[in-house]
Image (cartoon, rainbow, N blue to C red; front, side):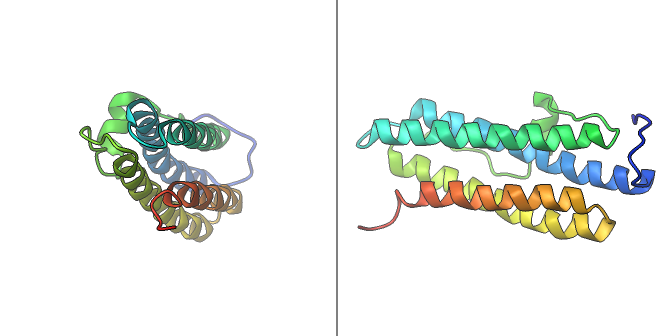
Length: 160
């Protein structure tokens, strides 16, 4: 379903960009839930520090979700954030339910952040190719911020 818009991008470009944005929206919603999974379930040394870190990562990813969904709707399409859609469309791996300690949650979340960052960087080029510079810019913003969140999480995995 699409809506009419005075946006001067062609219908074809808007449709392709919306599909690209929707794919990353499903991944971002999954990543957001994974960060909360880590936040709720982390145990062990550095509990409070990691509990708060995972909550900050969640909050940042939540902003990604809004940016992606709002761009889809600005292009005249419907953003699909339903749980069933997210579960069937995400390309991120399933978060390990058995993760308990801080290192296990950091490993799991870092893997998903790294995968998401790679997908977002590919989306920059894809958006450029289809002719939507604004969507490419949005993906560039997400790429920078994903790298920053990955840095924060990975810092807990590196030797002193």
